[in-house]
Image 1 (cartoon, rainbow, N blue to C red):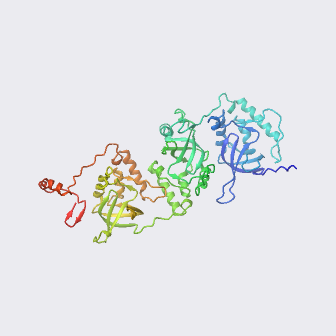
Image 2 (cartoon, rainbow, N blue to C red):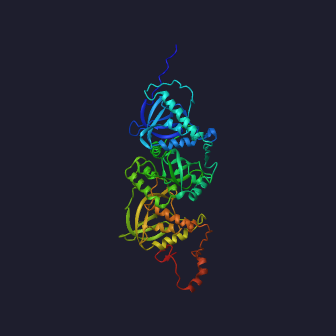
Length: 555
C-alpha cells in the first residue's frame, strides 16, 4: 500500500516583507525575518528568483574564478538591497526550513519611489540574469497566490532580455568582467596589502566588502578598491581581525567532537552581521597576526565605531595585542565603552567585580627604598619608621622593568636593569609620593610561598606617572596583559609612551649591543684592602648607599 505524499511545510507565507541579510549571487539572497522573542535567533531563508538564472560566483569548485559577469551581477543586487526591506512573493517552497524558496522580490524604484521594481525583471533588463526559458512556451507552474500571472511575468522577462541583448549590457557585453579571487598567504603576502593600502589608497584606507562574519571580531573581506588594481591586489581576499576588540568564539559543529560556542558568541556575530555583512566600507590596516596571514585593522562605518558598539553592549572585551597597533587617539572610545559595560555587568562582564584591595586605594607617603626597576618601599604619611613592617611594597602598575640577575645561580642582569633601577631611585627616593593602587596580585617569593603585592601609579611632583617616565626613556616596557586582566588606569598612556620610545630606538628597544657598566665589588675584605689606599687618597667621594646593615655599616 502506497503512503500518501507528505505536504511540503510552508516556511514563508505567500506574500510578506523581510530584510535582505546578504546576496549570495545575482539571483539568490538570504532573507532575514523577525526573531520570535528577545534572545531568540531571527529566522533566515535562502530565496532565489523564479525562472531566471545568474552566472556562477567564484568558489573552490571553480578554482576561485567567476563565470563571466557573475561578480557584476551580484554587486548590482548587493548595492541595491542589502540591509533593506523587500516584499516577497513565493512560488515554490521546499519541505524543510533549510530548503531554498523560489519566488519574486519587489522593492521601490530608487529613482522614483512611486514605482515598484520586480528585481528579477530589472536584473534581466540590465544583463545580470537571463531567463531560464529563452523565447519558448510558458511552462505550467503553480500560481495559486493570485499574484502576477505566469504569462505576464514570462513576457516581462523576455522583453527585458531582448533589451539587454540590444544594449549589450552585463553578460551580453563583448567582454564581461571575470574576477579571480586571490587569497592572502597563498597568492599574495598579507603585509604587502598593508603597505600598498597606506601608500596608494586615499587616506590610507582600503575599500572592501565584508563577505562573511566568522564571529564578532573576525571577518572575511574582499578588496574592491580600484586604487589597488595597479598593484595587482584588486579582489584580494583576506581575514580581518577587528583591532582593539576580542569577541567570544563561535563553535564549529563540523569538528569531531563538535566545539560549542562561547557564551554570547552567536549574539555578537548577529550584532555585527546586521551592521557590517556585505557592506562596502573603508578599512585601515595596521599589520598582521603572528601567522602573517590574518590582517588587523579598523572598519570605518559612516554611522559610528563598530568596535565601541560591540564593547558598549558587552559583546566583547578589549584585545591588548591588537589595540597596541592602533593610533593612541583612537583608543579612548574603546576604553570608555568597555568600562561602561563593566559597570553595568553586561553580558560577557556579567560576573565582573571591581578588584578588591586589602588597603587604601590612595595614600601619600615617602619613598624609602627602591628594590628593583619597578618596585619600591614607601612609608605612609603619619607613620613612624620604627619597623620594616611599616613599609608598603608597591610595584608600578602595567610596567615591566628589566630583571636583575642572581649572583648565586650565575644568572646575569637583563640589559638596562641597573640603569632602570638607578633612574627610579633618582626620581623617587626621599621624596613625597602619591600612590593610586589599581589591583593586587599574589607574587611567588619562594618555594610554595607567595606575597600579596599591590600595583599602582606613583605620582611625584609634576610627574603624573613615574612608570610612564621610565617607559618613555626606554628603560622599561609595558606589561602584556591578558584581555580579562586588571590594568593601570593610565595603560593607554604607557602604551603610547612605549611606541614613541620604540620609534626612537631608546634603551631596551635599541638595536645596538648593550654595554653593561662595570661595578667593582669591594665587599670582599682582601679586595677592599687592596683598594683602600687609592680610596683614601681620593678624599671625599660621591657614592650611593645601596644597603644598610646596621646603624654604622653600609654597602
